[in-house]
Structures are given as C-alpha cells and as structure tokens.
Amino acid sequence: MSWTEIVIEIARDNAEALSDALMEAGALSVSVEDADEGTDAEQPLFGEPGMEPEEAAWEHSRVVALTDVDADQSAIVAAAAKAIRLKTVPAFTLRAVAEQDWVRLTQSQFAPIHIGKNIWVVPSWHEAPDPEGLILELDPGLAFGTGSHPTTRLCMEWLEANPAPGKTVLDYGCGSGILAMVAKKLDSGVVNGVDIDPQAIESARDNALRNKCDIEYFLPDTFAKSAHAGQRFDTVVANILSSPLKVMAPMLSGRVADGGALILSGVLARQANEVIDAYAPFIKLGVWAEQDGWVALHGRLGSDAAPLARVKEGA
Image 1 (spheres, one colour):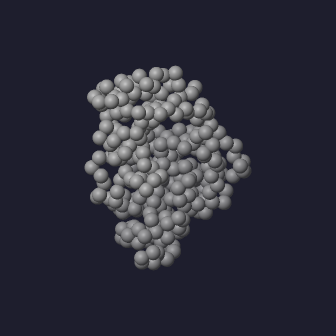
Image 2 (cartoon, rainbow, N blue to C red):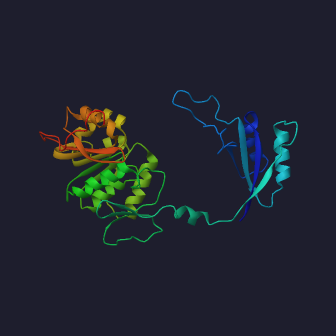
Image 3 (tube, rainbow, N blue to C red):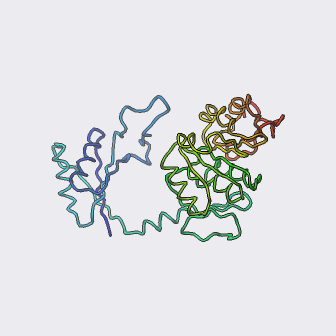
C-alpha cells in the first residue's frame, strides 16, 4: 500500500488546531515539525530545566498529514481549514511515501548483541552467531533491558564472572527479566524477579517462557505476600537509578543472605560515592566496573572490606 503526505507550513497559533482538524477530515496520522529545522532559525522545543517554553510548538511550524494515496488531499485541507475558521485555505505540497516492508526495516535495526565473554542477546528473527554461547532470545519491547544499555551489560557481565550454581537470585527492578534469565542460564537455583510495572512483569514472564527459564516474577505487593516474602537471597541485583537505590538501601540490603552478594547499577560514576554511603550502614560496596560513565557497585554481606576502591571524589 502507498501513501501521500500533505505538507503545510503554518504559524504556531494554528498548528495544533489544524493537526486535529486534519485528523477529523480523514488524515491517517499527523505530526508537527519545526519548519526551520536545519537552518540558523531552528528552535529547540525544550530549553534548560526550569526554562521550558509555555507552549510546545514552533513559531514556524510544519504540519505533515499522512493520507491514502487515493484520498482527495485538496478536500481534506479545505475541510480542515473550514473547521478551524481559517480565512483562506493554506498552501500545501504533496509528498509520496514509497511502499516499504516496515516490519523488515524495523527488524534490520536490531542485530544480536555480544556481552561479556559468552553471552548473546538475539532477536527472534536472527540466528545465534555462536550456538554454543549463553543465548537469550529477546525482542526489543516496552520493558527496559535488552543488553544495549551499559548498566544492563555491567550487571550481565558481573553475573557471568561470578556464577553461583544452585544459589538463589533476586532481580529487583527486573524490567524485561534479562538479568534473572542470565542467572538462571548460569545454573542458579531459585530465581525471582520484581518490578513495579505490570507490563514489565508480563514481558518478563513471556521472555522467561520463550527462553525456557523457570523464574517467578512479581509486583512488589504480591512478592510481599508470596512464599518468598521473608527470603534472603545469595545474590541480589538491582539495575534501577541512584535515587531509588538510595531509598531502598535498607530493604535491598535486608534481602541479601549472610555472605551473599549485592550488585547495583543504574548509577553514574559521579553518583557512586553517594550510593556507597547510603548502603554503608548495611553492606560495604565498591566499584566493580565502569562503562560509558556508568558503574556497577558490588559487595558481600559480612565482608569487612569493600571489594574495590571507591571512585575518587570529583570523578
């Protein structure tokens, strides 16, 4: 199927109203762009924090409406102009949209990802580059965690470097469930995942089923009422962000079994000492590795020394 785009340049005051009117008049979709994009007059839509513009629009806007190729584009524009009471029908140009295999085009943007020594994250439409590796079949989706982000990679690399066959693992803030699946494929025993997002839990369960991993995933409330409610784990991994990690320091530390390991990521290198300090009353942490400005912290409950030196102040 082919489509035609209607392109209209219009002042900011009418851009939003015209967009809505074009949809009512038969457009399939409408977007608004900066008509001065790529020129000296280009305007950022948002400024610095605390200085955002009052209206999310550009002084000189370009409205782009997608229509069926056989649609009457002139009639659509005229109807939209009349609906918002423009004095004249705005000038417009037409742009052909070539037919493409959008699914294949999207899939081509996601190739297998090699992580650590032996881990491969492979979309379902690809063959595994190394069938003997630790293979995770995982398609990009709404839940965070495909192995492309440094924080996820750091946690996966830690798990690979510290396998614990038969040991229990808790993945808190599990997202897609990727870390829990790595642990399970490295022969861990009971593995649980927890996330506040119901959609993430659904995604994680689907991924575990696809990868033949026996893992239970919970929302926090159901986890607190489950058979694992008071359980302490040999490994607790949490790839979230520094602020919630600091708030959850007592809870996450309390989930670590004696001699067990705690691994935290989602922490920028400059935030490492703040997080280390938040956990200091419970467990001594150190920086395990850094990648692209992000760090993974780890420590063992009951250890008298941090595993690695702390990040230098100001780093």
